[in-house]
Amino acid sequence: MASPRFAEPVWSLFRIVVGLLFLCHGLATVFGVLGGSRGSGQAIEPGTWPNWYAGVIQLICGALVLAGLATRPAAVLASGSMAYAYFVVHQPQALLPIENGGVTPALYAWAFLAIAVIGAGPWSADALIARRRSAPLAPNSRSAAVRS
Image (cartoon, rainbow, N blue to C red; front, top):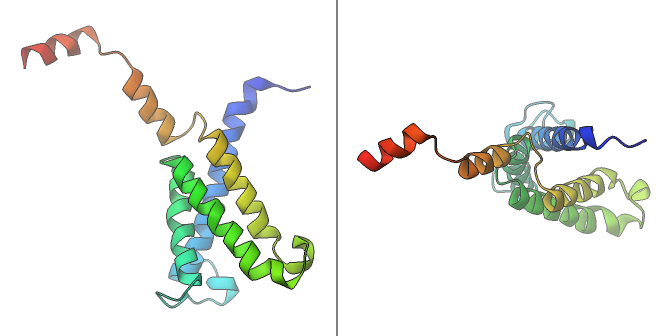
């Protein structure tokens, strides 16, 4: 039995968790924290193609998706970077993700694509900005604006 009452909050939680996990990958790659890049304890050398740039995308897009700010463009970029990682790094080794070690990039690519299509949900900076833009001015605020 489906409960639409919980759909929007659960979608927001999904976006938050996916953004946080992606952000953690970026932190590990760029700064060497949380075990470092691929558990090495080290950061990737700045400017190294494509790993360092992927880490920067993970860091920035993960933070934006986590906050729900500019969610759709950030999710499109994150999805594309994970599709690139899958098809360039993993897929040439074997056809299926379970065989080529590409399960994580494949899941991220599809999760971010879903976030880009559906949006951030109600618990997001994007939703807060939209609510503030559409909120009518209070009577006192309108008269104060006219006087200034």
